[in-house]
Image (cartoon, rainbow, N blue to C red; front, side, top):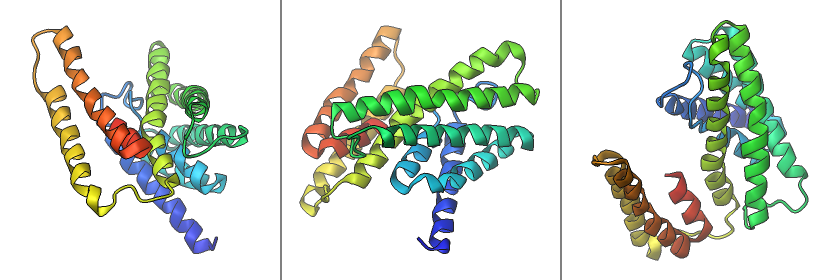
Length: 240
């Protein structure tokens, strides 16, 4: 890989990280930094699994920019960025070292490995280093540490599970799934997901039980995506 190509990849990862992070921060952030869904975790994990460990500077730079932008002191932002980077390195290293692990997530074993090593375990690294940095930098009070850690860990775990699988599966696909003759059905599926999302999130309900029942409208759509478009369709629909 040439130096120019390497720098381009690092810069691309940093930009994607920042854009995804700004989107995640639009959700209710605990202590201003920890959200219940953190998409950059999935982007960082997929980037290192697909491109190699040496792309880690892109994660560090992206995380540093985001946290300074959010209002963290530079030294605190550097601590958080270190935690985000080590999280991605730990998760990708654990999965790469696992015998037989496939990036296509083609088996239950692959999916469970992603859940355990990338979503559950490696995210502890980022949550612990990040919240510690915020506390030592007097950004998070002692009484809010546990709540912030819990939200941070959960947000990173959900981000890894939602974002990494679609990237890995699509990058590993060996044949084009959206052939011209299947485009109309794919468009219909996309419209169905959009309509269902608007129905679930925007249509008010009288009771909590009715709100839970609304969510079941997604199940037929997800089954449709899985049967007709396989693994790529399933993970993409889940992500959306």
